[in-house]
Length: 142
Image 1 (cartoon, rainbow, N blue to C red):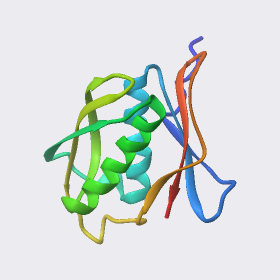
Image 2 (cartoon, rainbow, N blue to C red):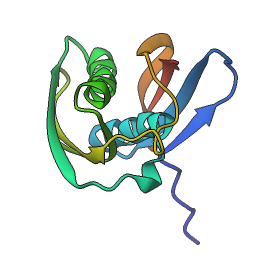
Image 3 (cartoon, one colour):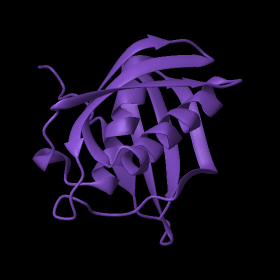
Image 4 (tube, rainbow, N blue to C red):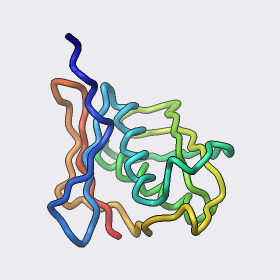
């Protein structure tokens, strides 16, 4: 009997002033995509956002930890700069210090918005390889 797949992310309820989640992936690319989806689920009603418009996102950092944080910051920034919500992410290139990806979505609207995210923080931040692949824990300042 095959065990059901682990969900791509879950929200952690032990903090009240921020939103914390854990994301999972069989590899780093899948982990980064699932972390981006978790952020999108905080920002908007993802199931109502159609992946109609493509935006390229490139980020660099000195480490994998910083790359994940910069990636999530870039998504939050693009929501504000491009006035868009995103529901799909595809990672084209991922190294320990560089990421190139595409985010797909549509123009934002108050009806589809949920929570304003100010920043990604390093509070209880974690990025690690596990027996199942990769996991991260991220806290968002809301």
